[in-house]
Length: 220
Image 1 (spheres, helix red, strand yellow):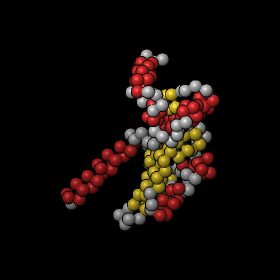
Image 2 (cartoon, rainbow, N blue to C red):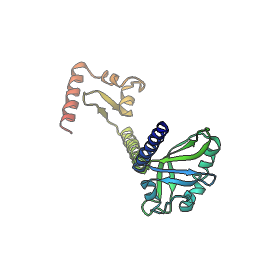
Image 3 (spheres, rainbow, N blue to C red):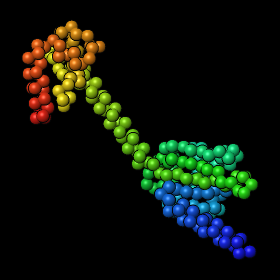
């Protein structure tokens, strides 16, 4: 039947296009099937992660045995049984097979593949490597913690100095006044920082603000 041939040809072409897309994906992609989750497809990125030991008919546990103790081998069992998609973000994985970075992080998705009777017959494993993103986040957290530590040190020092100390924004607004200022003037620290100008006569306020703006403009 000509119509059936066209339909089968169209389906084959669609399958081929999908295979090409998955093969070129920057993520690791595999399709384990059956009760032992043996691979029927792996892309180049997956093969590279396994240091070119991946082959059809094998399981992930064969070349990533350490992944079993980390829960990755059992996850497909759950998806296969329930048919529910699993999504995990920035999951750490210690892979002894990789010669470069032993611990890597992945955004992992296990998606149940269904046949014409809506029965689960396999799983699509899709896992972009987000190790560099996680490292950047970790470095940012370390930097933020260090900045907070230094800020606390500076505040501790300024709290013990018996002179008025202020921080100004580029427009001349006060962003910080040290405890000695409140102790000396008797102002309530709960008030707006703008109230720190109140103890100064109007003429002195303008002069002090001009000095502060000029100093910031000169980077002093």
